[in-house]
Image (cartoon, rainbow, N blue to C red; front, side, top):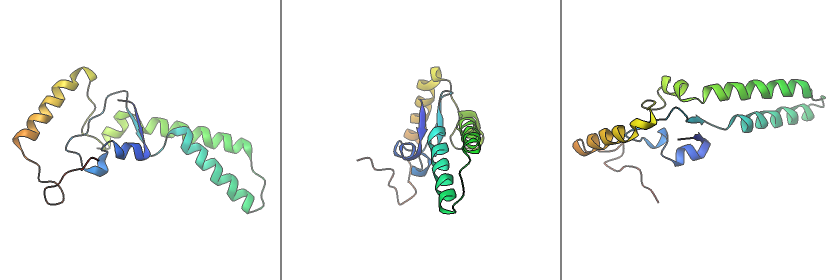
Length: 125
């Protein structure tokens, strides 16, 4: 429905949990980290690397790197980009959610799932 980043993405039954179906709405975003967070981490690493080598840190280059990383992550976290790389089963119109959910539940009902590990699915606790 909205943004899904990092561990929260996996916690909400991301691809790593081998869900039977995984759809996205056009408003969804998904990435390892949010654009600002990733740019910040890269900036911290570069700043610490420069300090360890005894070099001055170029703040203008840092700002340019942060802007480039944020723009790239922003564009690569969009649903059409991710769906084109098969991270999900498709982008659906929110108005079709009930129909798609009904089709998925029908498929689940008619074809029992054996699971990847001897018939056990994802355990929620």
